[in-house]
Length: 368
Ligand SMILES: NC(=O)c1ccc[n+]([C@@H]2O[C@H](COP(=O)([O-])OP(=O)(O)OC[C@H]3O[C@@H](n4cnc5c(N)ncnc54)[C@H](OP(=O)(O)O)[C@@H]3O)[C@@H](O)[C@H]2O)c1
Image 1 (cartoon, protein in one colour):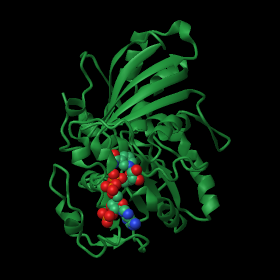
Image 2: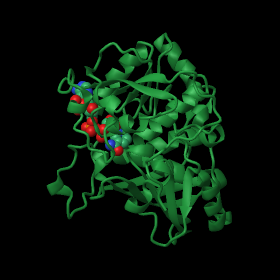
Image 3: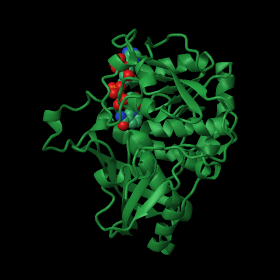
Image 4: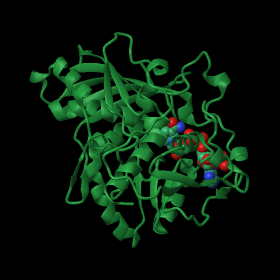
C-alpha cells in the first residue's frame, strides 16, 4: 500500500552537514517550485532561505505570490519569505531551479558563473557535454564531469540536472534490464498527468473527458535521447551514450499526478531472456543513495507490484513518499522480448524530489 508524504526523513549513513545549508529556489511559485518548498520543509540538511520568481511575483511575500496548490499546508517559514526577482544577488550557494525553460538556460548559467551550485529541473542544460544528467541510483559517477565544467566557468560554480519527468521513470525501470541483457531497442507510450504541464498548462475544458495525444516542448525527443546519456558511460571525462534506440509516443491524460507508461523492449542477446530474473533484478535493485542512506532516498528505488492491474497512478504514485518507481505487468512480448508498465510521481521523483536527492549526493561527495 502507499506511504504518505508525512514524516519523510530518516537518519542516514552519509555524514550530515554540521549546520543546515541555506538554499534558494528559482521558480519557487510554480508547480515544481512549490514541491521544492514542500519537500524542503523540515529537511535535515537543507534550509529554504531564498525564493525567486518572475517580476509578477517579486516583492510580494511568498505566501501571497505562490497561490499554493498542494494538498499540505504551506510551510509558515516559507510564507513569510519575500519573493526576489530573477538575477538578484543570492546569499545561498546551493540553488534549486524549477524555472520555466524560456528563462532557465540563461539564468542558470548566470548563477553558476557567479559560483552557485545550480541543481536544475529544466531541460536547457541537460544534454550539455560537461553537465551531469543525474539519477543518483543509476549514474552517480557522472558527477565526475563537474570539475571540467568548473574549469570552463573559471570558478567553483556548476550546474547539474535531473531528467525529464517521464525519463526518470523509464530510465529507472529499464536500468536493471540494460545491465542484465543489454537493450537493443524499446518502445514506450506514456500517459502523463496534468501537473506535468504546470498550473496553467492544460485548460480543464481541454483535458476532462479527453486524452491529448501530443505534448509540446519536444517531449518525445527528450524521452528518446535522455535515457541514453543517463545509462551511458563516462570515459576520460566524456559521456558516451548507451547504444539502444527508443521510440516514444506521449499522451496527456486527466490524472493530477503520476506518469504511467507501457514499455516493450528487445534485447541485444535474445536467447537468454528470463522474465523471472528480470523481475527479481528490478525488485532487488539498490543504488548509491540507498548505500549512503541519503535523507530523501527511498528504501527501494524500484518496487515490483504483482497484482495484474497495477501500478495505477492514484494507488501507487505516493509509494515511499513519491520517490520510488513502481513497475508491474512484466511479461513476454510477442513482437519484441518483454513488456511492462511503470509509474513515476512526476513532480516528486520526476522533478523536485529528484533534484533534492541530487543535491544530497553532491553534499555526501563533498561537492557543495
Ligand atoms: N511539472 C513537472 O512535472 C515537471 C517535471 C520535470 C521538469 N519540469 C520542468 O520544470 C520547470 C518548471 O515547471 P513547472 O511545471 O513548475 O512550471 P510553472 O508552474 O509554469 O512554473 C514556472 C516558474 O517559473 C517562473 N517564471 C516564469 N517566467 C519567468 C521569468 N520570465 N522570470 C523569472 N521567473 C519566471 C514562474 O514565476 P511566476 O509565478 O512569478 O510567473 C514560476 O515560478 C520547467 O522547465 C519544466 O519543464 C516540470
